[in-house]
Image (cartoon, rainbow, N blue to C red; front, side):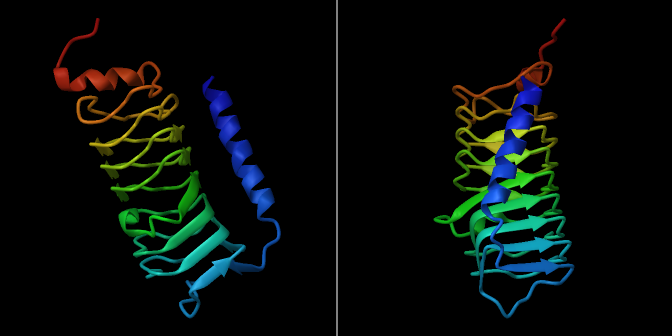
Length: 203
């Protein structure tokens, strides 16, 4: 079951990449071109965008592959049908992106210390990502999927986790009294973490 979930997500990512084959521009190994405010059908590979301010910039149908995007500023940034693959994205505050156009998927990315607060992440897919010490507060994660993700120290609070799939995620702690979890999917042994706050012994 777990391997099928990972395979399914990878197939969806491949399909998405095929849909974006008509690339208008390719950027390889460059810093962020800060004289541009809109990117359509673009591919960014091995680029370094660390600490770049991309506030107000529009990314439509784009692929980011093996890029370093850590600590980017993304105030009112549009990420519309964007794929991030193998990217380092630590410390990004996604809470301030353009909330009307935020449809992304993350595959094999490092999202440690990132912030997703009061964000609509419904059906969003995180596949084989490191999401350590991140924050999901008052966010909508209904039907989202964390396939193969490490969620150590990540905070989920006052969020909608209904039908969210944690079946192959690891190291998570979720307070079921502070989140909506109806229909959420968990698996052994990680699901035992949901009982940690009660300080009970399981033998």
